[in-house]
Amino acid sequence: MNPNSDSERRPARIDPDGIYPEGDLRLLLHLSEQDLRRARKSGLLPFVRQGRGRLYLGKWIIDWLEASAVTSTTEGDAGPVEGAGEVRDAR
Image (tube, rainbow, N blue to C red):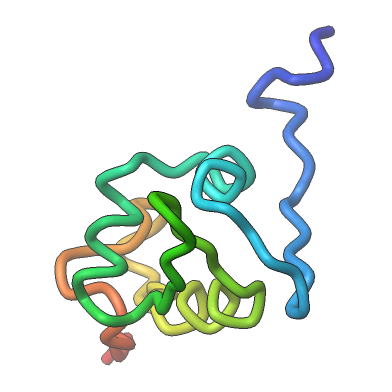
């Protein structure tokens, strides 16, 4: 089997003290440019401009992922939804 296949992906490990360039973050979490742009514009994912690039602290990434978590079991594995960052109640 191919070690890089989707079925054998390893969980991403984010160091809270690490610094992640945007391209590395996209590859690590399998995100599109649009996903990160939306997170930045929403204000949920802080970043620092470094020249023409953007940098993210690991703790900011973890905070963003936790804030964007979908808690409703009815949404299954659909991922974050419109208004990501709002914790949805399963009631």
